[in-house]
Image (cartoon, rainbow, N blue to C red; front, top):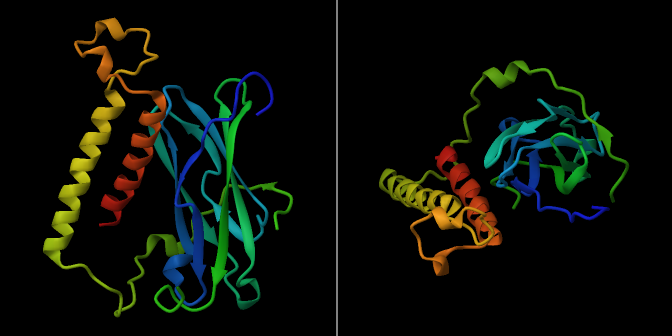
Length: 215
């Protein structure tokens, strides 16, 4: 970023979107944007191919230490669009001045077949607010041959994820070395952590949250 401030990292999950021509349930994907900072930010989603995608609420605000889910739908899943690399740009802006604080590009690609069978930047254009598709109200079952984790393994994964979330949450509430009110904490100063470490915990917390939601 130009000026006295440097660009801040933009945390997005996943780091790429893959749509599969033969699997209709993959034509709608979810992008999660994280704001691990102590101040609110505005976000804006741009695309190199706005005619091929529908995005629900492509711009808005994220509160401090919060996240928001963005629904992205591929509206033209045809063979001629397969294996074409499109890009989404996630732009984070100052909440009041709308000055760009950071940005990140996410690749989107339509692939042939189904997920189990398949293991050039242009000008970015603004995306309009997409209308909800009738299929968004319908639950599409996964293929019968999809791998399903045994029940007890699911429980173990959930317990471990909850424990990781608790540790990350405590770390985010832990005093930092740059905290102006450190003298009010009953914690030895040598145990204070840096803002960089907090960002790592915030990123891990977001990934663990997505794992629990998928379960």
